Length: 78
Image (tube, rainbow, N blue to C red; front, side, top):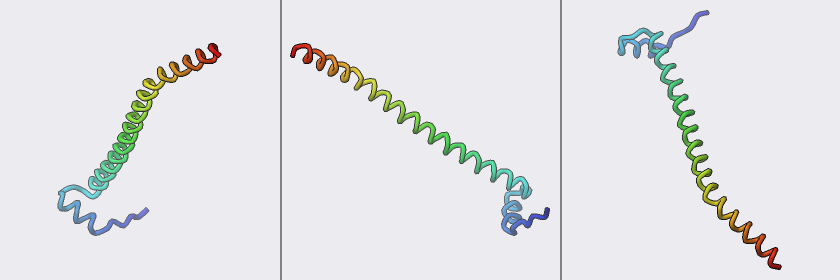
């Protein structure tokens, strides 16, 4: 299989004093690392949102229990 390499790729590789294969390999590596970082950042943001929601739930749960207890008390009183 024959692959045509753009002229600019040869120029960039020459400027960096690396082979075209090394340039392509490093480019793909950086692209994949960036994609992984984006996924990790998204996961971290999801974790932070979940943590915030759990904190709010933990604060609201006792209030709901008190309301429920109060409502049961009122029903018994009537």
